[in-house]
Image (cartoon, rainbow over all chains, first blue to last red):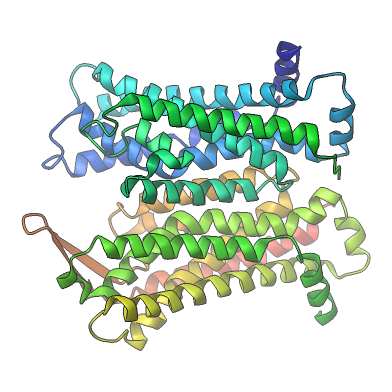
Length: 243
Length: 251
């Protein structure tokens, strides 16, 4: 049933122009990072690591959250319109499957964004003239960023479901991301889901931000499970308010 | 027009726009406080100049999304409910456009005034030496307000143009990125071609970072009246074109 739900959710997203947004917007931090690297080569001596600091800085601090929020808002927008909530809730499908199928797509979006960032990072590196390929450690940071992004995706899906506006969850994601920057700088990053992405990505740092992986993974897992459980409970308990 | 104005404010009740604008202001306040905490006491003496440089940078990131959200919240109630045609039978079409824009401008004015108030309060709390000169205060207002009005106008046009709000919101995010990117552009033609880059183009502070001493010194620069003039022309032309497009649009 879950697989059928995933297929149906995928079908709802056809002809949505989402792919264009996700292809174009990450190009800007890559170009910005490359330009910054070129202008400050005297200070940035660690080659691929230095370029990573510049490319990941703006993407994970400010733009990953709103981008995934845009995706989540779009997934739920279909249900918020045209009395679709009524139809959705009367379908012979478990509530958990409805939420999990949408979550699956949001996680897919996170993985896609991260992989696209990796491709752009390598292209930028080659354009600015870096030799060879980046260290495997940077790829691991990217994958760690994927894990950090899972909690954000689950939270945004919950917000987009509960708030019937398309725009408000995106605005909240941007505010959350800024707060994430402040809290991670203050050493409180593990307690705020939006900080986990930039910590995982090692944004703007050449030295590893996460010494011990266990608390990071625990925090990520807890936030992910918490928001997923809240989302499923919300669907079960809350009555339909169709437009 | 007064009747339509009152009705618009009744429609925006409980839509939470004011609350979100307040949240954006709150995050700006926290962010700038965090910046001030990291600055050595000796450098805080020139705090007003530092804030006049830092706040537009923060606004470049936050404002395009905030304005996209505001415009979308204002316009999507008619778009989503498919009531624009009905509304046009009761109100003059050009008034609908003007009032939506004016309502957005009211929220924007509230935000900018609160931000300027915040700067004065932080100056008192952190003991900035010297007072904020009226000239700096006025140019700071112009820098933030005029650019933001231009972006809001663009967002209102986009929100009315697309039933699917993904494009206006994506434009807001794109604008945040481009605006931020533009801080690295050299002053010149390119900056004047991108609406979001006017936050940096109209910046009238220069900073000089001494890498060895680890200090940043801020200087006043002449205000770029040419850029302001070009921006005002762009906003006026955008208003005329946007309104004309809205009036001709098949609802």
